[in-house]
Image (cartoon, rainbow, N blue to C red; front, side):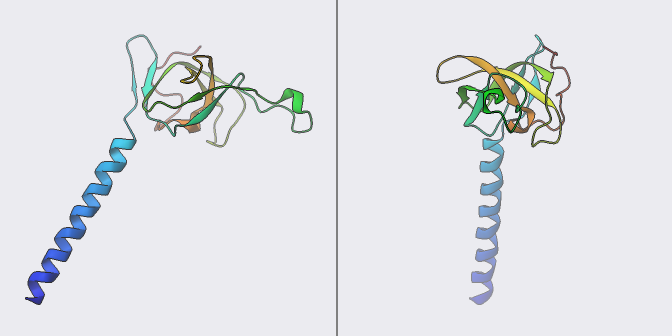
Length: 126
């Protein structure tokens, strides 16, 4: 009886692990470049979309980027990329996209996306 209970516990734990892995994978859609050079990619939504690719002067609030919209969809579409100021992702790649609240366009740092490398291969430069 004890052996059977132990085996069932191991099987149940394995099922939970597989279930968690499948759920995490569903939340992280793969990235792929489309034929027109744009990118379809999973991301850490919701995230702000900014009007520029730099953080500005820390001492001058007027130079800080403005939030123009919010990225809520996952996966999302990104038109192209550009190199801007270095961000928390450790590189200077920013992707251009359309927001989900007002439809305004702007920039998100590459650290927002689930890309394995930046810029993602096959995505055009803006």
